[in-house]
Length: 245
Image (cartoon, rainbow, N blue to C red; front, side, top):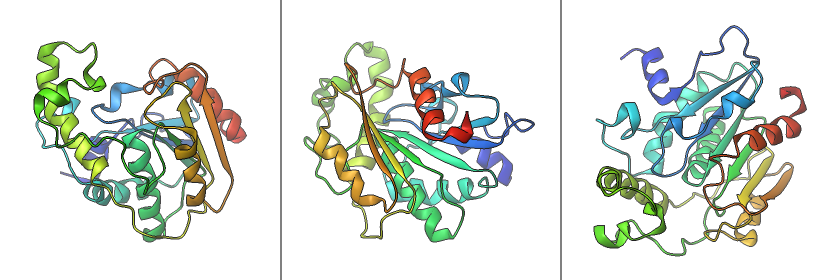
């Protein structure tokens, strides 16, 4: 596989706005989700190229084994992002995606490459805080009974269960290494009605940046508020980064 093919497999949308792109937004989806989960590109100007991370084990990569190690995911992903930092860029991650985005930024710092203009981290407690109710070791029936499968057809549950277990393992076995705070500013987001994380856990991200920090809650929104809130998120990104508008 060529370097271009590898980048295209991991970063959906890379090169799609080659003629107009002046900036890039790298998007990191939540556990169990693939690159098609969010549609931010529709609400951002043509000058912003949206590149969504496609981890193995989902959508067009369903034949590949899903990763269960955050370090392994970042080791594969960060060098591919590093090859596409010729334009100013930012990260948006939701839930599991927030952890992968954060660790990717730390790996990019170690590689000595250009860092994101800002990290938008959503729906996840700060690194190092304990998981409230670890789920990756639950028996299948108990994992299927969790909120992650509410409203999902039985046949789809059977297909999604191994992927969700792998993603939960990735998140729940993650232990951040002690490092200096990132010099990138952080915006931390969540739905105000997300009962998986509270304001104190979100505010804990503040210690992971030496730059600006902002916390925003979307009123009345649950954990997976992102689906359906793409317009509001795009508007927030362009307000926060005025040059992106």
